[in-house]
Amino acid sequence: MEVKFLDKLMEMIDKERVFINEPMSKHTTFRIGGPADYFVCPNTINEVQKIIRLCNEMEMPFYLLGKGSNLLVGDKGFRGVIICLYKQMEKIEVTGTRIKAQAGALLIKVASEACKNGLSGLEFAGGIPGTLGGAVVMNAGAYGGEMKDVLEEVTVLTKEGELLVLNKEELELGYRTSIIGRKEYIALEVVLNLKEKDREEIRAYMDELREQRVKKQPLEYASAGSTFKRPVGHFAGQLIEQSGLRGFQVGDAQVSEKHCGFVINRGNATAKDIVNLMNQVSEKVEEKFGIILEPEVKKLGEF
Image (cartoon, rainbow, N blue to C red; front, side, top):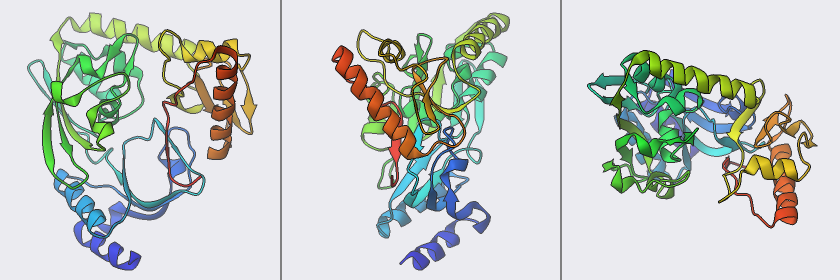
């Protein structure tokens, strides 16, 4: 069946954009992950639809990937198809106070484009390393801002390959959640509604936030950003630090000494190292404070 699947896949997408046994360590910000059976890079919404319909027809598991900034892929990889929406689908258009962008556009680039056009509201996203699509799925946020503050509508694809346009109310946006993630929709295109403001003021604020990130976050190491969601009334990093876990290490995975809310790959960490460390951190925080830390990092594949 796999040969037949590959033949059909090659009929709908250029072979130069289809990769076999592709190491996922090349496609996640953790720099960790075994091989995906198939890794494809569609150029258009139509190609994405065709690939998903083929996967459904042949009962082939699939997963939509952006930059892999909030993802931990197992050491044994992923049995199925990774559909990468990144550099092939990153078009950004600005019209008045609205920005329409494809899901593969980097959030940093969208924020920069907003700044160039004197549009405010996306400054908080200027240092978030993922794609716009991924940010929408999880309602990404930082420094008091969230995607829900600027979203107008999102074009999504259902798992069955049907196109839908969802407005802000229909997205059911909450803390690190949306209907897109819950129903496993695929974000394809996003419309943001921003406000006019002086470009230099926007740039100054973005620079200020960037300085804070460099000062407080372990950007020199591979990581998936914040490892745990913020518990109600608390900060995950603070709880981890107060549990005596600053610098705690399993293999080459470590609780960052710079910011305890980050688990970092010091160079040769495995997915198993990361999972073991996260489990031990969760257990110790629960034991000390009675608070259960919920992972913000998504796990994928075989561990």
